[in-house]
Length: 139
Image (cartoon, rainbow, N blue to C red; front, top):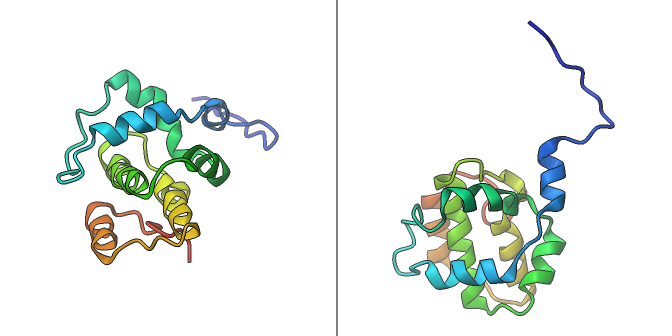
């Protein structure tokens, strides 16, 4: 048996990969246009296996990236993304984000715009994801 050595100055491959991921507004628009808002529970077939791997680091991007990319998206589009990422964290392998979830950043952007997340959406989020940080982050 061999053991590795932890180097606090070395970055993990996961962090490096996240830092290299570029948020693509066209990819987000495709999600918005493909997700059925009336029945968003089934997103399993929305992305191919290759896309799931290629885009999984989207879940770990910082708030600033989300805010700048989504500034020209309307509130309905942001709500569609909240629904998608709420389900993605549960349904897609390696898409768990906990306190770094895009849902949190998108909800903050909506609040910044003075657009409240309605009670029905809050209940839906809680019923469709076990992430205790959704939708508002650590309180």
